[in-house]
Length: 188
Image (cartoon, one colour):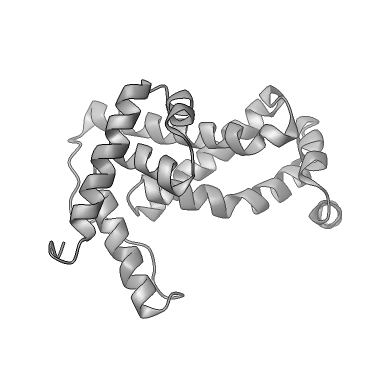
């Protein structure tokens, strides 16, 4: 098995996808290795810095991708296709939370580790994560996909199933809240 993984390390993403469609676990392991940092980063932003939840959702998204790989039409569509799976995993987790718990957020959420960042950069990252945590789930989702992932309002609406006008409102309102929360005058 280790030999198969070594062979996949230099393979193109298109070749990996063809092999994954044929249920090659070594190819899938390499695909996960390549895409995992991005997926975990996206989900950590959506989960307001809750690393454990984001990592669980990333694992869930990769498992769904394994099961549904034959739905992927072309290898070039992988980024958008997988992003949709990850966002859907996040949205489903929020629905489960709302079904059984209060949706309010508190200041006890874990924040990203700052060990590997310079002090100023780590502070800014923590400030952003705290500010994102204060947005509603829908605002955080739309702002993260728009500003963090570079998706247009239409692409966000398509990926999430949220009406276009609502996406625009969430992005505008969420961005405005972030500006206020991160401005020096606010202090918080």
